[in-house]
Every structure is written in C-alpha cells, then in structure tokens.
Length: 168
Image 1 (cartoon, rainbow, N blue to C red):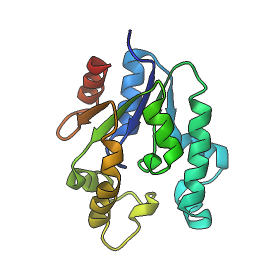
Image 2 (cartoon, helix red, strand yellow):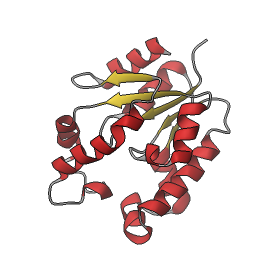
Image 3 (cartoon, rainbow, N blue to C red):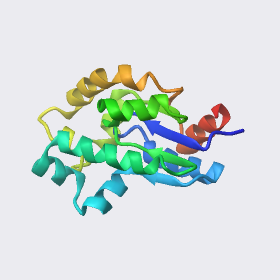
Image 4 (cartoon, rainbow, N blue to C red):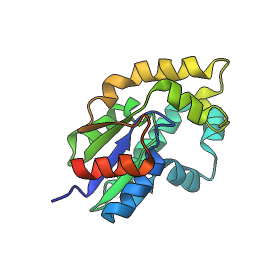
C-alpha cells in the first residue's frame, strides 16, 4: 500500500510546494501547504509576522498548524524550510506514521531560484547566498533524518514527484 501521510521537507527554494502539488495530483491525496495555511489563518504575510513577532513565535504557530494537519487520515504536507528546527515538529515528522521526504538541493541552485523573492525573511540580509549555506549547514542533520532523500538538482517537478511516488 502506498503511503497516504507524507511530508516534504527541505530548504526554501527546494521545490516543496510545486512537488507537493504534482505528487498530490499523481496519488490523489490532499495537499496542505503550510505557508499558505499560516498566512490565511493569521491574516499576515510570513515576512511581516517575522518582523512583528519574531522567529520563535512563528515556529510555535507553525507547530500548531502541523498538529492540526496530522489529525487528517491522509495528507501531503508542504512544510516550511525551518520546520525541523522545532523539536516538537521533529517528533511529529520523524516518529509518527508519516513518510518524510527530504528534497535535497544544491545551495547555489536554491539561490538562483529565490534570489529575487523578497518574501523570504531569513534571506533579507547582505549576502543571501552565504545565508543559505549557513542555514543548510544548521539544518542538514535534521533533514537527513527523513525516510527518503531525493536529490532535486537538474530534475523537473514531474520527475521529482514520480521518483517520490516510486519510493512510497
């Protein structure tokens, strides 16, 4: 039986949302895009929430959303890149009956994908390329706890989703 509880993790710009949409179409499981859910629920852009309330409060709210999503019988979750920073989220993503998939992407490719995106609060710094590398170094040990790792470099969204489907 194919898994019906799936979470995509990885750095911002790794393609989690696009791949989750494609995978949802392939396996006919409902998609929950956490950033979209956050912005609808709290009626604020994530970058503005970060500015007004800070990252710690954001991570707390993110955990609340994750806890709501996992009450469903089946789902594909497109998570935020930093979701694995919260130990409660790691407990959910790595210890529950969820197939967690790490979309591993080269930091240079991530930078090229998101360099013009001004809605990435953690990259509103002087050297965003170096910040991506720093964030990845801090997070990679957590990302590597995923059930499946998919290298995304030089693959289309469809190819990545099909590869995930084969591995479920």
